[in-house]
Length: 155
Picture 1 (cartoon, rainbow, N blue to C red):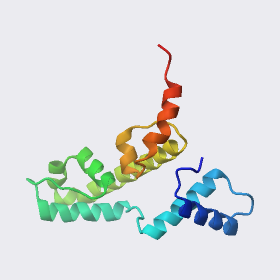
Picture 2: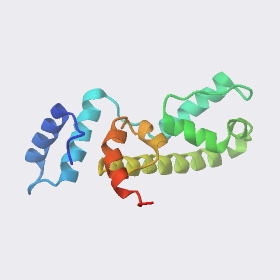
Picture 3: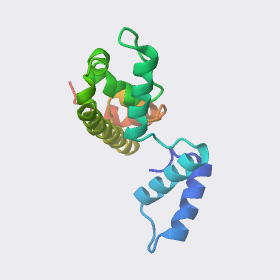
């Protein structure tokens, strides 16, 4: 259950659990600690909804109504696509706070979904490949192909 975690991150995660857990750590605790170590080491902490909204505001000013923005965060891109770029740009100034609140809720929902996909894929359960790439789990297809083959119904 831990073979997909790089050895250095796994070792650091286990050391973290040894220092912070009162009882023997579960696989889930080791996974979470290893992910935390990796995130801190690589500086890849996911952005929050406020930062994402700031990027959207900058894109409105830079790209404008007629352009097509390209966000480096796939979650931000999906939320903007869901709302519609032109609709975001055409929102009246008085309604910006409403749009921001709706964006925050949609963003947090999408982040939660990506986290669920990560958890299920780490467990070997096949999930939609589009979300695996966003979750940084490019090698999961290899890990899940065997499980997917076993789950297929005989013809």
